Image 1 (cartoon, rainbow, N blue to C red):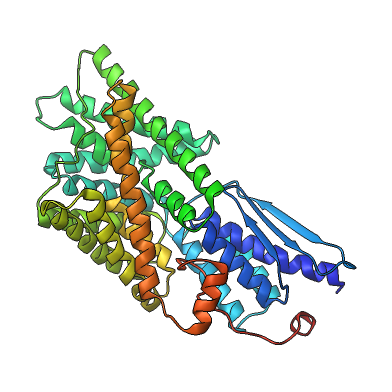
Image 2 (cartoon, rainbow, N blue to C red):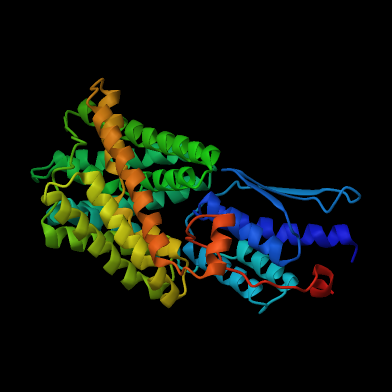
Length: 442
């Protein structure tokens, strides 16, 4: 085939792989490294890969006498689908290990992008309910709060799924989720049942709290992708403001009906005991992993890692260690064990890391700070500083754990220094192939 067309096909494959990774939660550094590895393997040396929050660009300059080839793709849809992420990770490994050629890899990535999810929607609804249940246990809620949280979590998932069909911006889905959680608490408060409305609301909206966005933002910042990090932070802020708007509307509706409910967002001191924290963290991590379509084989290890991580954080906090430092220590443990566990169960470390740190996320602190600031209570600045510190140390702890855990062979070290930091998805190393691109694609 003509040389330019051959180059375009190689760049297109790298772009489609990068799009699948970025849209499913991979960090910009991992996406850049994976795309660069594919281009380098296919014989395109010195390809410029540019990754932002919404755009992927590849540029190849073969020399002054050859035309420069630039391809670009937009990332318009984002969803945590760890089944697709795992499949793409395996595809890249197969390609770089000479088990498939470029054309077969292109066919597989097209099939992945057009295929559905491995679990039915009702099962994902149950996954959201399980996650809310775990948070209720983590926060020390009784069985009534736990049941209400499960019902609310499932209802929010169904509602957001229906709203997606109208293609409304994500902000409005967040508003609807916060409204549903609050109105449920208001409705129960109107009955003789004695509950803590704050626990009900907080446990119900945990899946909406955009703590994962903070982690991705600071991971990008730590690896030098500042533009993408800023975009992620802005997305987090808008998503959390949507929750606050929904909660405020729900409380206003309750007051108009004669039910005055006080929702106190500051629940940081209301954790359960050690067994409750460990059990709640395990259920929360496994529930999130399932709702993100993680392969079934990794759910039990994620539950164990999440439970131990939550217990480590709780024990350190009870020992008067600052919450941010305690969270960082727990994140280091998660990052350290995630690499070996992910390799044993054949999933990217990102799947294990992201799911296991969900119980540690600073989403509650973000919600607390913005709620207090919205009511002109400037003590919310302290909560925001705490949230930022927790997010930074979560990212730093996970990355440090990965640095310690990943193999330190010379070839892997050389590739990692050139392309990225510790890898949460994508190949750790590639073979040095001396065949030319024309010989490989002929």
